[in-house]
Image (cartoon, rainbow, N blue to C red):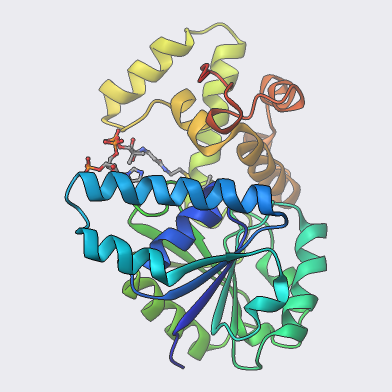
Length: 283
Ligand code: CAA
């Protein structure tokens, strides 16, 4: 199946980055948000990234104009009806996803693929509420989506070989390197990354070392581009908490039990960079 038009649902940090990536790769891209204010904010963030790329000479003025031309925003789900593939990047809430998937299933042409950017929820459950579970898979991007090379392709027990092949080709056409994982909570990356991040929170809670020393230790001792607290703020404390809870729910392994400090920070609206406050201040 040939993919020409991509629909992205959600224009937050991840949805916006994914829409940017698809438009840059030459796809006609339509991104949908739930209201005009969120849509304008998301599109402005993408435009700022393109301006920066232009000023650095990574895009010529003509390429930037053509790329902008390929991306459109909407607040109407119906406008996505003629998309060949949908990448869903809405809030990590299963109820929300289970409400959305049957609507998309009714709206889209029968051959269209439905891909979720979920980082830890069950893609199988999303596929099961559609009449096309063979065409439902996970396509998990990493923040910042236009820069990070990896995508995880998540295969459920119902996803067809043909769908996986098409998604692999699509991922490569976006300039990404795909890896394939089964639909188990956390897939590959978060199954390994979440215990690391929440162990850092526990270390801080227990007074083992300071925030700055833990960040410095992992940056300079292991060559990581960011220390765990900088990364937690970057990924989002809310996203990290949801991912930890989802993996904990599946395995009941204490390694994934969210530490109280992480939960209290999220309860206080400290989501990290996106809310202006997390382990660091961004105002
Ligand atoms: N669009 C286009 N380009 C972008 C961009 C965007 N949205 N964001 C950053 N860039 C570009 C910058 O312009 C810069 O380009 P040049 O090298 O040409 O100057 C390049 O990316 C690097 O950015 P910076 O110079 O600003 O900063 P940096 O060198 O410190 O790199 C980083 C930033 C790429 C984010 C790096 O710190 C990094 O790799 N951090 C780790 C990120 C990570 O681990 N992400 C995964 C999180 S887990 C996740 O997302 C999944 C989940 O489910 C929780």
